[in-house]
Every structure is written in structure tokens, then in C-alpha cells.
Amino acid sequence: MTFLGTGTSQGVPVITCQCAVCSSVNPKDQRLRTSVLMRTDNQTIAIDSGPDFRQQMLRAGVNRLDGLVLTHEHKDHIAGLDDIRAFNFSSGLDMPVYSTAKVQEALRREFHYVFAATSYPGVPRVGLHEINDQPFYIGDDLWTPLPVRHHQLPVLGFRLGSVAYITDANHLEHETWDRLQGVEVLVLNALRKEAHVSHFTLEEALEIAEKVGARETYLTHISHQLGVHDVVQAELPAGVFLAYDGLVVHTQNEGS
Image 1 (cartoon, one colour):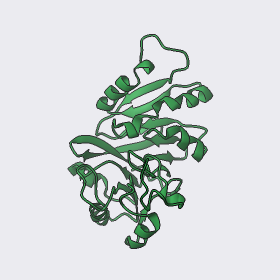
Image 2 (cartoon, one colour):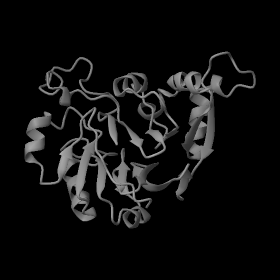
Image 3 (cartoon, helix red, strand yellow):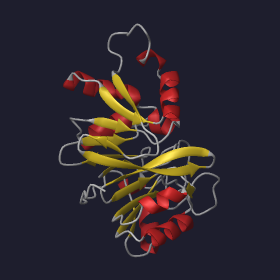
Image 4 (cartoon, one colour):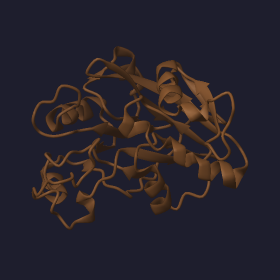
């Protein structure tokens, strides 16, 4: 699992902001919009394609992408879809995109030219695969959705083997708690320390991490309001880490 981006919808640094985090020269305080790359034995899949998707693919040296899984329809998670064209050109194949019907509706609206009856030369070629809250396969890999709420918006996290990835949430649905049993690596959003209407705070994320009991927990979707990386990391309990852009976590895919 490679963290392609670990920042909020604005990214870090935030335009015009001069706070300690946005002024930091530590690369761990410089965060693109939230996304991860999941590599298994046979597949390379990205979760979300935000506005920084092109930069993230180049920085991570991704030369092959077998699919794209989308958590929800907000711009900071889908705006980079156009850049899958490069993978169309190199592979000669349509890009499989896995999302709910509601997210597909947003894609058809935001990227209407992709789905037009008359295709313009060079537009992205995608193959939409509708998913819901039930497990599904991408190749031989079983993906288990983790339904959560982002204020009132339904969002899907995902479990792949022993890894669970949840972003943009402030509530876990009942079935998600059951599906988190046995998770070894948990990724969870932790926006800031102050209360927020649609994201977990640091304290709330730590409470969930303790209940889940994963061997390692990585916090993502981090705002400049949380604080500088090194200071916050020093305050975290054992086994909990602030994720940062470019971080690679090696895990065991148990097929769960």
C-alpha cells in the first residue's frame, strides 16, 4: 500500500496560508489530496483519483494500473479521472472503474464528454462497474466494502486482505464494525483536533483504532490544522502513525 496523498480537499500547504504547517519544509507536512495505491501479486489498483492524480502517478512511478476504485463523488476524490488516458494509451484497454451507482451518476455529469454518444478522439476510455455494500472481486482479489457516513453522504471504505482503508467519515455503519474484525492494518481519516461536521477528529480516530485493535493504524486525510507531522507523531500511542505522502506499507493479503 502506497499513500499517494494524505491531505484534505485543499491539500497542504493551503493556498495563501502562512501557518507553521503550511510553511514547513518537512516533506511529511506537504500533502496532496487523499489517495492510495494497492499492489497485490497480480494487480495494481488506485483508490480514488483526485485533482493531483497525474502528479501522484508520476511521483510513484506507476506504469501500469489495472483499475480504479472510488469511495465517493466529491471532487477531491474524482477530479483526476481524465488522466487515466495515459494508461489507456499504454495498455490499449479501457480502465475498469468500480463505484456505486450514485458515484457513476456524478462521473457521467462531471465527465460528460467521456460518455457522449459520439466519442471525441483521445478522451478517457473507462468501463464502469457498479458496486454496492457487498463484497466483489477484481481479478482474484476480494474487496469488501466498508460503509461509512461523511456527515449525511454515504461513502465506502474498503478491506483488502488484512488491510482496511477508510477516508472521509465521521460514522461507521454497523456492518463495518463486523467487517473490521481481524484487520491488521487500519487506515482512518483524522482531520484535526477540533470537532468537525463530517470527519473524525484525532481523538475520535484514536478511539476507533483502539476498538478495532489493528496491529498498525495509519491516519490520513490530514489538515494543516492538526499540527506539524513530527510534533503530532510524538504524541500518538504505540502502533499509530501519521501517514505521509509516499509512505509504503507492506502487508499480508489474506484474501479476507
